[in-house]
Length: 197
Image (cartoon, rainbow, N blue to C red; front, side, top):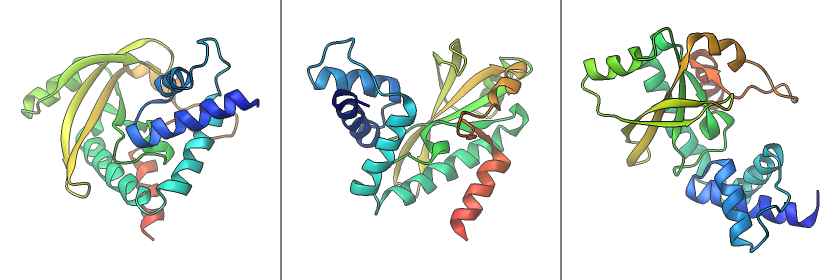
């Protein structure tokens, strides 16, 4: 890895941790902040994640574990509420790099794409509809909910990403290191229990 890529990774890592940015936008903003050309070589996500973990170890080691735990508790609450839609937790909250600045991303795998939205309406849950790029590159609907986190003493954004049930098969593949990009409620419960013991 060259010096420029390292510098981009370090700057992007700070943006990810301190502002809760996602990896792609953080890399692009890092390039801009460093005054580099738009075609500068970007670090891959594994390199950026390593930089994020290093940044957390240096600057946030005393607060990040509690913040991550609080976000995972909120995620568990919503995964339990939306259990019929096979929720899977992704993003920084799943990977263990989240701070209080991060949003929670739950991927729902629905037989009917409107069923999750109807469930929220039935329970008088206020939400906003948007769209995000899905894990296979396609655009998917996102239902965003503002939810209180007593442990963080702030509101947290929970995004319910709506996928077709058939997308579940592709969602469970592991990467080159054997890690998964998401986990179901049982997997989250195991992590919470391991961190509690």
